[in-house]
Length: 172
Image 1 (cartoon, helix red, strand yellow):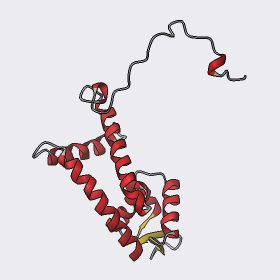
Image 2 (cartoon, rainbow, N blue to C red; image 1 turned 60 degrees about the vertical axis):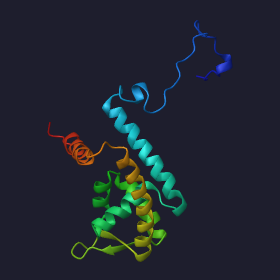
Image 3 (spheres, rainbow, N blue to C red; image 1 turned 90 degrees about the vertical axis):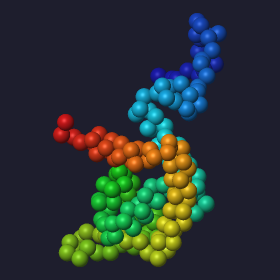
Image 4 (cartoon, rainbow, N blue to C red; image 1 turned 120 degrees about the vertical axis):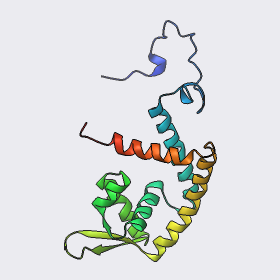
């Protein structure tokens, strides 16, 4: 079946009806009237885009930054553990660690007791790259925190942590 082009299609009966304007973030359903899950997704997307832009000049992607951060926090973890910590698929983590290894930011090590298992660790170059990325991420974190009402940050952190732990449960 051939797909028709827009110019080949008949006009709709109410073609004079104008579609409503798409509201900006913070307005209507994209603001306080919106569903919480949508607002979380919107905030997450804005946060990721901001981080992506701030890391671009040092050649690090947000997933790479998360991987470097977790490797710093949990030295010598496996790729499978890194995938679990970063909420990424093992395949995606494989690509990320491959790129970071080629860049000299991480190095693989054999597991001391499990011969076939590989562990990943930051190299000195990876430490420097992570420090540069963290400086940019901390600036974004400060901006996010500045948008919270005074004294609300601990409650927001607790709420976000509760969401992460309660929504992921599969036993319900």
